Amino acid sequence: VPELPEVEVTRRKIEHALIGRTVTVVTTTPNSYFFITPPDTLERLLPGQSATRLERLGKYLVASFDSGDRLLLHLGMTGQLFVHGASSVRLLSATGGGSLTPEGQLAAFEADEHTHLQLAFRDGGPRVLFRDVRKFGKVQLLRPGEAATRLEKLGVDALAATAGDLLRATRGRRLVIKTLLLDQSVLAGVGNIYADEALFLAGVRPTRRAARVTRNDADRIVTALQQVLRRSIDTGGASINDYVQPDGEDGTYQDERRVYGRAGEPCPNCRTPILRRVIGQRSSHYCRRCQH
DNA sequence: AGACTAACCTGAAAGC
DNA sequence: TGCTTTCAGGTTAGTC
Image (tube, rainbow, N blue to C red; front, side, top):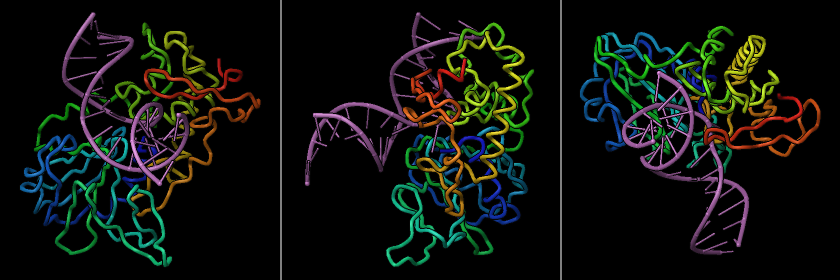
């Protein structure tokens, strides 16, 4: 599932399929929770436009078009962007993972009932597909000059954040540090996996009150956070449930997890069993001996 | 303002 | 085998 690293890997792999290509046909599924901008509006306004850049802001992707329109994409929990036919490595299975065909032959991605947005281009080349089983993802088209409330609420991007940014947000807050890390208006892009991993590396327990985080803690948390985010980008992201890269490859960061999803397993430092408990309605994983 | 809850949706895995 | 329950990495509207 997509947090900052997965969104960044997606951005890098989808960029070439979007920029400089003129949209001709937009195909959608019926209106739903998924569409901030109704599908018929997308079908009406996008054709003829060509993207000039694709940037990532926190967990959002923003495609800018030559018209001045901007297309916001959020992958939610199960969103996947694919370049149709880019891979030929794997066949997209019903669960969203990749797999070889029974014959071991190579097959391209095809749109299915969960593919809510498809862009076809004038050059007749690969289409861009946005698939999302749970429909927690979002698509929004912003006209030129139109304010993007969602983007304006984002805090500093987690990769660019400083210890001071984090420390400032902790002052006078009653909530616990784990919950604060997940607040997109503080550090944009951090999700459950990387929050747990960063807190483990920093030696800070997720249940620590934010107001009790010291300058030194904040330094270690931000350093650890950026270390795990960068490492995950380098390894193609974490393919734990649904996430696959736009070309169908799995990321491998899940193999490097220290604590996330490892309840009961020995701590990599001290062998004490990793604990799991729910914090702010999210599962959290930590070592009670190494994290204080 | 800040903090907490429920809700949005579907499918896989675990439990019985 | 088959039915039921639990769980999932995100965000936001509503409530106190």
